[in-house]
Amino acid sequence: MLQLRFRSPARRFVFAAIAYSLGVFGVLKLTWVEIHAVLPFTQWQGRVAEGAIGAPALPIDVTLACSGVDAFALCAGAILAYPASWRQRLGGTAIGFALILTLNSIRIGTLGRAAASPRLFETLHVYVWPAVLILAIAGYVFGWMQRVNPHPLVTADRDREVVPPGVPFALMAWAVVFVILFVAASPLYLHSTTVLAAAALIARGAATALSAFGIAAAAHGNLLWTSKGVFEVTQECIATPLVPLYFAAVMTYCTQWRRRVLAVVAAAPLFAGLGIARLLVMALPAALVGSPLFLIHAFYQLLLAVLVVFGAAVWQRRATAWRVAAIGCLCGAALAYLLGPAYAAVPALFAIDIPFNDAQGAMASLPSFQTGLYVALSIATMTVFDWRALITGLGRLVAVQAAAFGVLVAVSRHSDLTPHIRDVRAWAIAAPLAIIVIGLVAHDPRD
Image (cartoon, rainbow, N blue to C red):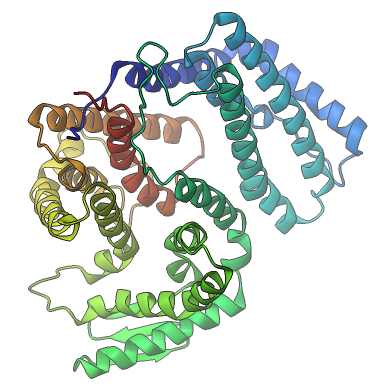
């Protein structure tokens, strides 16, 4: 029977990878190293790029931000933490460095050539090249691991499977691909007049539905007017990250192309309906919802959390999946609601402010939301309840929350980098889900 346990090798690899990545990044960010090694080397890459691709269309400044040290730190951390000989690890790190050096030089060159077009430059700089680097590093690291150990899912000492059968790896792979494409294409749909027209249709549909509930509502363009205020439906409101996950599920579970085509066609009315349902929060009574705008902004985050819990329950248990998932969601929601004030009091106790504009409350609600989601996922995936595993995982989640917030505060104080609200909401789902997945991957079937 499946218990949520963390096996030592998997746990060591995860924490070692984090430690190595932070260590490499910390060394490369030392002032002396940056001045005498990283900056000269980055400027050398700029000269190589100019010689290979051509002079930039406009003068550009190749600074430390162009060095690619963050990408190299991630790559080196994963390779150095992998259980292989040190000769293989150092060789893999060296090849990874050469790969990142080549890609980063090409990146600098293409950005220089695109400098005359601000929109193209921003698209390449903010969306396309980060996605390319992530894909390239992930592909190289996994390929290197496969070459070093052709059977990475089997332990060397006991010859037993670490990953339970049925893990939807295809779904994960398709999700990664579509999410990266979704992010890379964001400059197109976030400024698209067609998508804005679709947002206006959703606003009108919501106004009609609210009127049917007896709520005074009207739509003008992409603005929805109600007695509770005015809500602007923008491109970002309907371009939810659920879209790439939906297409990933289509590619995974629709094995016939006819069904895939039908599912793709159904995407438009499906997400239009979800967009209208999101705005129907306005119809909820004030006694039940004090701030409808908070639920409207968090609608897709909450929906995705429910889908993740139900998906995990269906994967682990067939007959009782829906009942167990519903219990998990109710317990997680109740816990998140109860813990909300306590979590909110912690930053106030230490006089720490959220280091960016959090008008939607995404960061303020993140700790309690993650705790509730973790408990819901634990209930959905455990067939034998294990208090020790539950408390251990909860402790890891709290440690990850504290570390992530500390890094966010440090980065915000020493740079102009601020997270996008979409990134905060993605992290809200990703952290508890990753802790659960690590526990399942590290499960010993003979326990």
